[in-house]
Amino acid sequence: MIYLDNAATTPVSQQVLDAMIPWYRECYGNPSSHYSIGYEAKAAIDKARQQVADALHCLPVEVYFTGCGTESDNWAIKGTALRMAQQGKKHLITSAIEHHAVLHSMKALEKQGFEVTYLPVDEKGFVRPADLEAAIRPDTGLVSIMAANNEIGTIEPVAELGRIARAHKVLFHTDAVQAVGHIPVDVEAWNVDLLSLSAHKFRGPKGVGALYVKKPLRLPALIQGGGQEKGRRSGTENVPGAVGMAAALREAVDGLSRESPRLAALRDRLIDGLTGLPYTRLTGDPVNRLPGTASFVFEGVEGEALLLHLDARGICASSGSACSSASLDPSHVLLAIGLPHAIAHGSLRLSLGAENTEADVDYILKEVPQVVAYLRELSPVWDRDAQKPTWEL
Ligand code: PLP
Image (tube, rainbow, N blue to C red; front, side):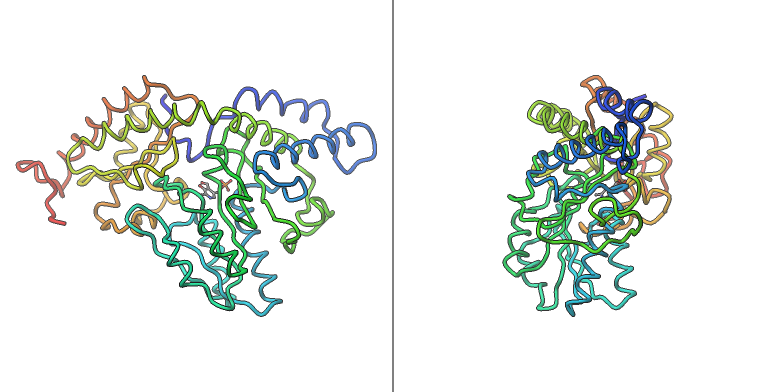
């Protein structure tokens, strides 16, 4: 099997697993308990928080553990909205290409009377800073723009967007779920007040994430209970999860200067090889993109069929985002960058990770062109004589 869906999730690294196991079997105490294995668990959480803070360039008190990236996004947005309601503010700004964790949180707020501006993006997927500047109103309370897009890999100009929000005294949240562990992240340099991350995207375990909340900001709690996480996110701490996330983040950050150019070279081989096929284009920006993400559209090909045929050849990949792949609608991201519906249906995302090699790329460059050619031969929208789509766009 060749796994090329690391933007959906990653295998836990051996080192991370080894770091987690003792916290399940030996030191399984509750961090709130008053005996030695409880104190040890509490110390492990504190250490993990410090390690996450070091990776983000913030203070440990600014890191709150959560259950996943989705929870972090929901908390950042809905928690800020609760604060905004007390201040008489009702406007939020986001982009059209956010993950559904952000977009659906915004939609839920709209139902409660908040107003949301969805900034458009250009054909590479970039939010234009001038659009953000123009959208800010006196009653704007939050800007939420992702650091890097999960489908097309475009890296947004977060520092500049954060600078604009800060100049207008508006809180700035970034969904950095695809960025953390993959590109350098610095909450100070990025001018962010809130940042979401998720362990399973960088070889940590599933079911643990974190939200950075810049001091002295305090977000209202969405989950009440025993008062864990400084009373802001109750629930017995996921000690092995937090330890695993911190270990994975350290491993990723320590290896970034080596791994990032290696992945980018593999990615660029995929891009060069596959964009050589007729009626095939890269989606997203060729330069400012995540090192491991190569994304394409093939005209005259149905993305779902492509995935099934690749699966039969042992290749795990994705078309659009994993979360929306159950739906037959084309991806909102591909529509937002201006692709017509017909073309957006033929998307493929190949996302590389630590375990991928040159041989994997060789295999993809052999198999994908064969499958694309085969599907086009069967396609009602492919002109077999002219070897082009039946449409003129
Ligand atoms: N935000 C982005 C950009 C993502 O890619 C994902 C997962 O695909 C999420 C949020 C949700 O993270 P989680 O799976 O940890 O809930």
